[in-house]
Every structure is written in structure tokens, then in C-alpha cells.
Length: 167
Image 1 (cartoon, rainbow, N blue to C red):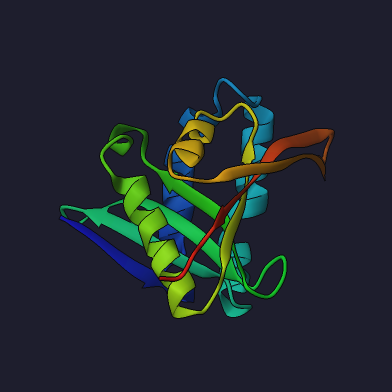
Image 2: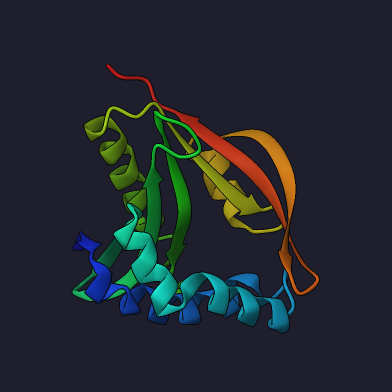
């Protein structure tokens, strides 16, 4: 049984913990260990996560059989009004392919309809195997960008969009 709950500022340590389990495996063939460590510290330290929740980011935790197995971070009305930015969506490696990511995506889609948003945007590393997941679930490739994140590191991303049609 899958259960999805929204996290508050006191709960973001779970995202930090999961990211430290997921990222090294997800990016081991794409990024150097140095870049993985740098990005984990930059994007997933407790203070950053708490500040994001306080400024309107929405974090969700998904559990399977009562155990945390993945998370997503969303930002409504970014980059523009009407859009939902999916900043983060990650599932433990051993739980991938079991519908966990799809359940999180469906939750994001439901949120879009609740908030009267028309589209989901996200960036994904061009070499991440999740590119196939996004294509399979209806996202359209709308661009590419390279983002200098400091310390000589670069994020080489595809930009995807999932337009939502209300019925």
C-alpha cells in the first residue's frame, strides 16, 4: 500500500536522509563523487529544505508498507503563474519500477488540478535514466540548458513539460 503525505519544516530531515541514499546510486555513472557530495550539501541540507518549505515549496513523502521510499519537491506558479515546477522526484533504487514514481507524478497532477495549474515543468540531467520515465509518462522535451552551479560543476539538463488538459 502506498501512502503520500505532505511534509512540514520539522519533517524535511526525511528528505535529507532519503537523498543521501538515492543520489549516490542515481548519479554514480553521470557525476563525480565530488559533484554528488557538493549538490547533496547544496540542495538537501536541512536549513535549505526548511527554508524552501517556509517559502512555499511543497514536499511530499511516499511510503510503501509504512516505510519511506521516495519524495518529491514542488513549487506552484514557477517559473510563471499557472505552472508547477517539479524540482525533485526521487525513489529508492530498489523501489524503482514498482509504480512509486508514477504515484508521485499522479499526486503532482492532482495538485495541479486542485490549484488550477496548466502544466508541470522539470529539469532532468540529460544522461539520467529517468529521461525515459518522463517521455513514457507524456512529458515533452522543450529545451536544454547548462547551469553553472559553482566549484567548476555544471548541470547539463533537459527541460520537460507536461501540459494538462482539464476535462
